[in-house]
Length: 234
Figure (cartoon, one colour):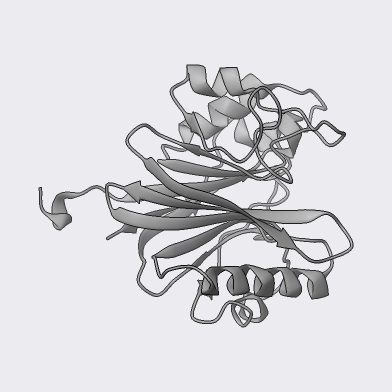
């Protein structure tokens, strides 16, 4: 198989809002229906766990795994799905090479997760995060992610998550060295999006062939955010 014949690798990012929809009902099955409709190879999640300790998974492990997804090992077996609410789900065929946690500064408890993966498009490092509500803290948090990445062996890298940023992406990119934060379509609030809070940042050795926001039912009611996605080629 030649590189040209390899299908694009799709990464999606979705803030689940703990599987509580705009109808105020917690329905994990509905959230999973949205995830499966994305057609993604890898899904980066935010607010995947309930808020109070011991922070059990809002999207249960058993439900996810019964539908063929691999839960990357950031949380606890039978407990949280991820770390600081950040989680990743992978389709079969993706091999996890290494995982790590990244502590982030700020008044709110925030963190990021990092996974080195072997995919059909080659090695890929993915960072999942949910940045803070205060811009100064968001910039500090992105700088902390960059410093962590600088300590690792070079690899094609993508950051995905809820950046909580209503403004221009340039101040965000300035914290990430040679990585560029993409301008993404509006994904919040789900019923009538006006802000691109959910974003991706890419290293220059990654090529995006398409990107978008998933608007189909029940996404407009399953969370206050719509999922975003992009397709990468080697």
